[in-house]
Length: 554
Ligand code: 16G
Ligand code: MG
Image 1 (cartoon, rainbow, N blue to C red):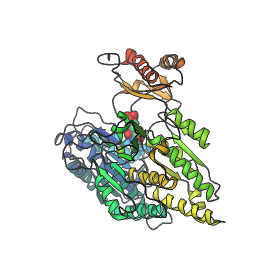
Image 2 (image 1 turned 180 degrees about the vertical axis):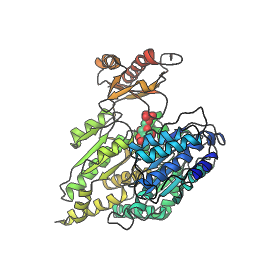
Image 3 (image 1 turned 90 degrees about the vertical axis):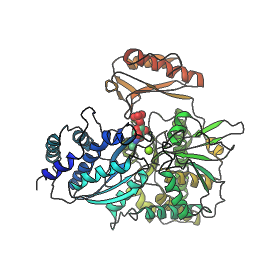
Image 4 (image 1 turned 30 degrees about the vertical axis):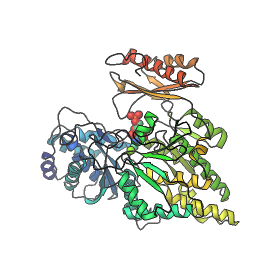
């Protein structure tokens, strides 16, 4: 069967591509800064249409398996938008297809698009006679409605069976994708509906919470995003008596509010509470990001000082709890943790020296972490920014399902482990599921946030951005901990770090913004700031663009 050129050409004419933009399918799919709608359409409309085409091809390539499409720009401002594809088991699009996405998005004319489609069909050996099925969803951004229509036009050009998931969190879309592909098989992941998702999580959490003393209510900053209605829907299913939460920053209909001075990214990067959320000392708070795939916790102490419990702290909490459960259940499976170079050095030290778990360090980006976590029996992966989950290997799942406990306490631990497998989203980091994981551990330990925090103290650190002429001139090695190119830069960083007590610093090009990021860590706040500045100037003075920041600007 050959490509229906007419159908594609006609559909494509309705989604012209702006000539002056180059698109890249990066770590988080296509992301574009744009002016508010209707201008957002001009920037992303053709990309969305072509993503629809690509999703159809990907599905055909995989013999009709369902592919997911999520329209969101996560923690970025409301006026931005983006899109990413989800592979059948709910994982990120296979990296070998990212180049196809970029190729299609950058075809300058309808004819060029047809030519490139043919190229992809040929290179990837796609049988066009196969069926195709795609599930798509979107977040609360005002530009989503029209952009989703463009995706649908792309799908329709290929006669794809379509499932409209509607307004969903990113992890819900990943969940649905996996459920649709496993329904009726021994690996069935769950009911392929949002109600099914809520029921799965609610049943698991109810089991885990049984017989435990309720903790004070958790305040949840929903970033004024899709997490707000979804959290409320979930609480209706599970009941406030089991999960007492107070949603704040839940205004999805107020223009311009998404991620504005709130949400996980704001809290993590600013190291402060969302604006206008006054922290009651010692109470628990958490923040979702705009598409609810990231979460961080925090609290204020008696002096009102802010304390962040980020992805590293969640990894430590989760790993310790799961290790205890595995041991109590009498199972011989091993837990491991995956981090990136951004993980605070104190967390890595805690994991390896106190918990005694193996830790792998990989480059930034969910796909790297997810992949590395798959090599452990139970692999917990978290980025410091709050994205992460815990994966159970197939053999571990079998062991958990079939193990016969020899004591009542082993049986109890095993029940909890079984519920935990259901509670934790196996497809991708999920703010709602991670929130329940943290709540489970705190409930079982009867810990306040301060008790959780006491595991270790973060080394002071600073993350800064440097604008450079060409970020693609920067390459890294050793899981981004060392710069390979430009040549000679690493030696200068080493020199800057050499005499700083507890000093660590690295430089990497951003995958989502046009800049280079500098991270520094040291024994004191002052020396960490100094080191970050010093390295930032080293980068700027040789490769920077624009005005040289005055001291203290970085
Ligand atoms: C993307 C990644 C996230 C990473 C971030 C780093 C996915 C789905 N998301 O948002 O994991 O932390 O990029 O951004 O992979 P940066 O490259 O701009 O520092
Ligand atoms: Mg996100």
